[in-house]
Structure formats: C-alpha cells, structure tokens
Amino acid sequence: ICAGCKTPIGPGRFLSCMDSVWHPDCFRCDACDKPISDYEFSMHEDHPYHKNCYRELYHPKCDVCKDFIPTNNNGLIEYRAHPFWMQKYCPSHEDDETPRCCSCERLEPKDVKYITLDDGRKLCLECLNSAIMDNDECQPLYIDIQEFYEGLNMKVEQQIPLLLVERQALNEAMEGEKVGHHHLPETRGLCLSEEQIVRTILKRPVIGPGNTIIEMMTRPHRLVRRCEVTAILILFGLPRLLTGSILAHEMMHAWLRLKGFRALSPEVEEGICQVLAHMWLESEITSGSSATTITHTASTSASTSSSSVSSKKGPKSDFEKKLGEFCKNQIETDTSAAYGDGFRVGNKAVTKYGLRATLDHIKLTGSFPY
Image 1: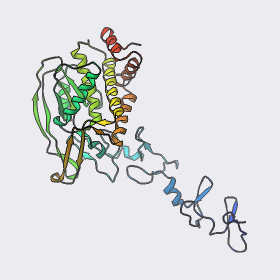
Image 2: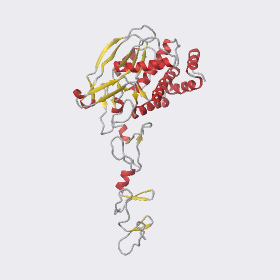
Image 3: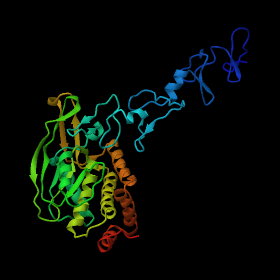
Image 4: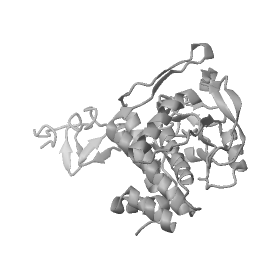
C-alpha cells in the first residue's frame, strides 16, 4: 500500500523510503508539494523535503550579507547574534570591517547604507530618525531633563551651558578636565568644571553623496567658571533617547557638585548617575511620548537632503520604544565596576530606601546604604 495515496502499489516503479513504499508521484516535498526524485532528500519532523527547499525553510540566513550562514569545519552551522537585537550574522563579519551603528550596535546589512558621520562613526537610518545634530535641536531635550529633575525635587538652580560637540572636541575637553571618571572605550558625555574653549556644533550638517555627513559648521565657545560646573558636553549624532540618557547622567554629576557632595568613589558617583539615566529612560518609555521628533530624507546629493524638527510631543515609533529598552539594557548589563556594578548597587539602594534617603546617605558617608 502506498503511504501517500493509500492505494495498492501494483506493477511498475515504486520507492522504498521512510519505512514505507510509495508511488513515485506520491513521495512529495512537504514544502513545494512536488515529487522528490533525487537520491538524497532532507527530513524534518517526519516530513520529507527537497534539499534546497529544506535549506530555504530551515537553514539560517545571515541578516547582514543575506546569504546562508556557512557551516564550520565540523559541519555545524555557527553564527553570531546580538544579545539584545538578536541580529544573526556570519562570524566573519566581526572581522571584515562591516560597519556597526554607533548607537544601537547593529551591523549594516548589505542592502542598506548607513550614514557616515564626519568623525567616522556610522549611524543606522532608524537611529538617524531621531538623532540630535546641533545645539538648537538639543535644547527642548535639555528642558525635558531639567523638568525631570525638578519633578524629583532636585532642581539644578544654575544655568549650565549645554554644548553638542564632535568626538574630537569631546576628547580634547576630557584631556583638559582635572576631575571625573570616563567610560571607555568611548566617552559620549562630559560634565566640565574647568575653564576651556570648546568647539560646538553651530548648524545641523547635511547628508551628502554616499550618505556621508557634509557641511559641518562649528564655532569656538569659551567656558567661564561661575560655579562648580562650567558646561555639559554631549556627543552629537545620537538618537534622542540615548542623548537624553547621557544628558540625565551628566546632569546628575552637575547636581552632585553643585550640592557640595564630597569626592566620591567612581562606583558611587557613576553608579548614582546611571541610576538617574535609567530612571529617565524608564519615564520616557512609560510615558510613550517623544519630546523631539526629527525626520530626515537621505539622498545621494546634498542638495536634495532635507530635515525637519518638531518640538511637539507625539507617540514613539516601535523602533524608538525598542531603542529605549536597549539603552536601559545597556545600563543594566554594563560589566564595568564603576558604571555597571555601581548602577546595580545604587539601583538596589534606591529601590529599597528611595532616592532622597539614598542621596542623604551618600552625602553623609560617601557610600550606598545596604
């Protein structure tokens, strides 16, 4: 009896496989429903497949090069995956200079062209949609952060200049600063206490040929010391939620200095600053609104590049919500002693005792309460 049509086999050709006999036309691929005439076929959950059909259905493809992920020397399928985004890719892309977004860390797929910032950083198009590119664009976000601190009864009384800067300007300012701890491999924000001259971004750059940033305009800004904090510097070109979390972190540095907190260990100071950044992200994700929505139209020529900025609050895109969760996850899973362990101890203290009691304890003892 044919295992396919359940009728007698009769005289003529037949196939014997899968512990059954079949009419040649009845032994069919479970994917394309065409007869399998090859000597070799694939199986999945007791169903036969053409080898090519099986590969299309079950062999993983690389999210970067879009090809099937090759097997290793042992014949096993080996791939890498981003721990948050779960972007699957061939192991070779870790060493072949495939661009990675400086914000969300995803690798550039072959059918997408990331934006190249003037300092060499790459920015994916989704992160570009809400990227903060100059001082004027950052001001509504700065006001949001100030209001967030006021809502915690932690108003920063002094008017602290906020400057959006390029990577080189940030690194130069960091070298001129005598105090502070810095998050390697790259610092993206800085709370300054020294008088310096810093080059800040004057006008939003445009997107030129090859999705490259051009016409970057900067100007020198002299910082004058009128209090314990002279300015807050933030790296330009990052999406709103990431920029905001960095700004919330640096604002906490400023608040601590202005409130006379003594020199704290890196674990305590960076830890409590990360707690505030995490709290701000949580409030933004929970609120479901975005204070600054920036849309871009990228073209291969500078003349057709355009952007528009709106200060109206509106619903976040699905990607922006996901990016907010990613930024939170980055804080929560940071492996460094100061930023990672410091955050986890500080967050535990704030959860147990509340923010105000935790800050009072830090000011009195220089450590987190346990």
